[in-house]
Image 1 (cartoon, rainbow, N blue to C red):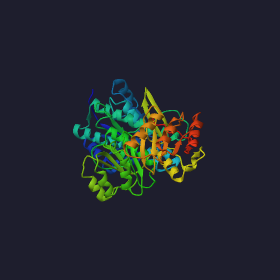
Image 2 (tube, helix red, strand yellow; image 1 turned 90 degrees about the vertical axis):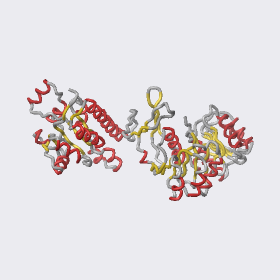
Image 3 (cartoon, rainbow, N blue to C red; image 1 turned 90 degrees about the horizontal axis):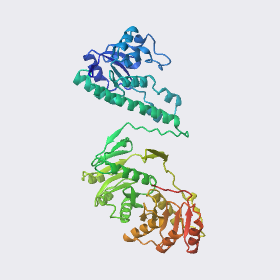
Image 4 (cartoon, rainbow, N blue to C red; image 1 turned 30 degrees about the vertical axis):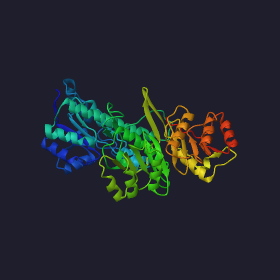
Length: 508
């Protein structure tokens, strides 16, 4: 029979909050309750009549509470099919049927996040609870499983609106959620034990999800798995889209390089920065970032590394943009920006970076260390007769941070802590350089005294030759080509400085 009426329940939960209205409904419906330990005390305080699991099993809770529910009289009542052969065994061994299992697991992830005490963490690996969840979910044809406090609302609805009578689809949906909870829990434990180990298994699980309006294009569905509220406070604007999230991720990654710098503003379009500048005031940084490409900035993602003031807000508001991100907004700036209701304003709480990154492809997933490396002045190796000046070193490091976050092949041209031109996503480095030069000239920049950054080595000297003709005086690149000497020799002959980083920053 598809419909089943709940007549008995086993309750064993860590979080008691939210359980009160369920207890009231269980009492109203006369459902027999089994429980143990702190949960039993809580239920009895709510006026419920409770049979202790210890009385059912004739065994006390032992081993400091590690063993309470692990007993045939408990699991037999959950796993028994409601058919003759199983019913006979239940009667033979005096095992009561259990129709409803409510569990909320020990907070393993929260404990890992709050302490380094290994013994405390290990004690928060739930054994009985996870076993109860899996047993009840396996027997979903006869048993209702509530695997976490997040599902309390679903149960309350079934108790109130259907007087505890559940359909097969109700039970199957809860069982599906139960296996999601249990697999996520096991993944968290696996990842804890794998930390710092050279393990090959791919294990990731994120319970929280948000359905997006659509994916990259309107005909594609999209979902975000994660907790945006941990990184951002959404101050205003429409709902974030799939493309917004991809661009926001790129913006945060770029600005992470400048989070401790002087006021810096960046403008991104389709994950690539089309303008970025560091200045003494945020307004100056905005104006100079916009100057690099005021055409691509239309509909872009904007990000600052410091508080947005009213003057900057008014200047920003002169163009159309999708998202503005900053650590803080002056009250007057927020009031001004909030007048346009569809513009998304995000206050970033943390420039978080995942240590591992992955993407799906073919019939699997690839995973790697996130590229968190960025070079300092001390790490630069001057390979030309002429060393870069102090100002050039500052610009080379600035350009190197920019080039790291653009799609390969890519070139960045910069001067005075300002992006002048960039070429990205090209099939040759020469094409990337020509694109960068063309963009810089199109927006009125002279490249005399500018610097050039490349995400990978130059296979030939042609790129530095073109750069010299454009007025470039210093170059930063990883090195590593068998023909590095050709590029170095050209720089020496023409009074250019070149430094090597030894680190490639490909971004596919």
